[in-house]
Image (tube, rainbow, N blue to C red; front, side):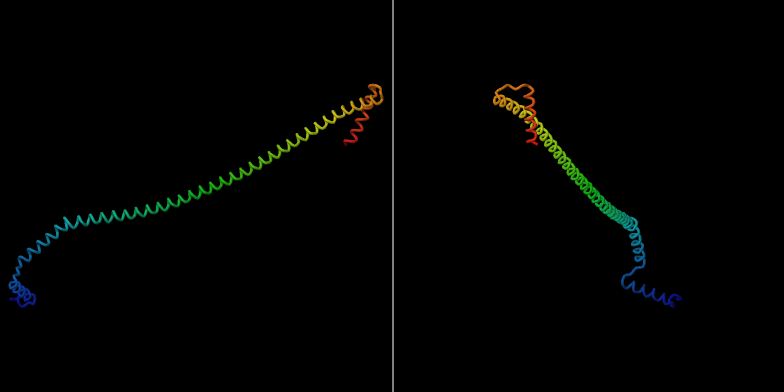
Length: 183
């Protein structure tokens, strides 16, 4: 009874006595421990480990999806910046084209105005030249008619026919008097 003198031996004996009273069986206890251990090992190998692998794969997929979503969000922001830049550049080009068109229209309008003024001046000049030519022609015609009338009147008054020299002299005097009056 060397074992019984030890406090551990007393505990074991007390446990055996308590086990007997409550229906405790050591062999059954150890077999149940082995069965539970085998069950947990089988569950770990065939259930828990595959479930953990699937959960890890899903976690990785979710992380990749989140990273891709961030990349896509950044690409969308970059695309928006590019779009706004293109719109700004197109607006500036359109403004430059409109300004150039307005400048060309003003220039073209000034050219047309200058051309119209030049044409009007040409018309006025031609009209003035035509008026001067008409006036000169009318004066020449008037001089001839006046000269003929003077000769005719003089012939009737004087009662004689004038010679060519007389006609020339009278024409010259009449023309000289007409020139002095018209100038």
